Image 1 (cartoon, rainbow, N blue to C red):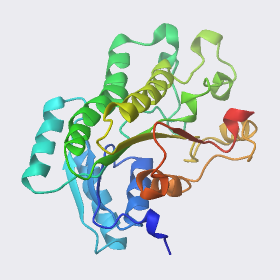
Image 2: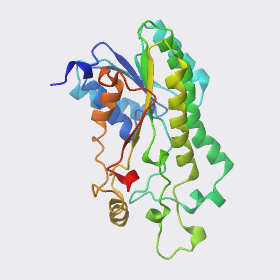
Image 3: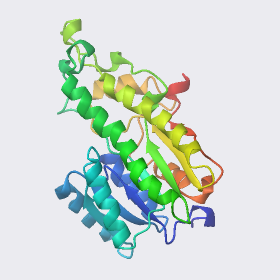
Length: 277
């Protein structure tokens, strides 16, 4: 049974990148608190699948979906105008959309991720989705929330790599020369660090408008990574393992509800202790 401060009855949250691994978990977390949802993603097919999946478990909840390109201000403004027209008032914005190269059994990082090989086109695209998209959504949806009587809450999904550097030894492959070794790309660290700056800026921008902004910095999530990688990264984490995908739900519930009503401008690091070792 949720305590009253965690309940989100009659509240509506918009989540970007909602069709992704953690996007679905963020949605589930808020649905558990009786929140209504506007799920957005650029992948409309997968978004439909997510909506159908969630409706089976939360049949009484209002779950709207809408294709959204966070790189396009027009796309964001059009959705904002539609929500206003439909009398859907946003109370919560979760900036979750990102392009994150995965290190899984069938999808390993490439040598093109290395700094010396990293293309400007890839830099611009990933910054546009992960950082500029959060800025644009905050600018449009956040301003609408600030101009409403109820205020609102913004949550930026960052990463433990917003406070520590990536350990490139995790991705090292035997038999490859140094210049061909795959690495976590520079854009990921820059974007996640930038989101912390965005969080602090927004937390102090709408003074008197009852807008709070915080960020969540999760550690790595287990998602079928190679055993060698799992052993390496687990040795860097005091808890000795990567996170389960559902282990961030309570943090999202806390940060998006009145349970955190006096928390503003904070980056909540939840990484099994990796960043303190």
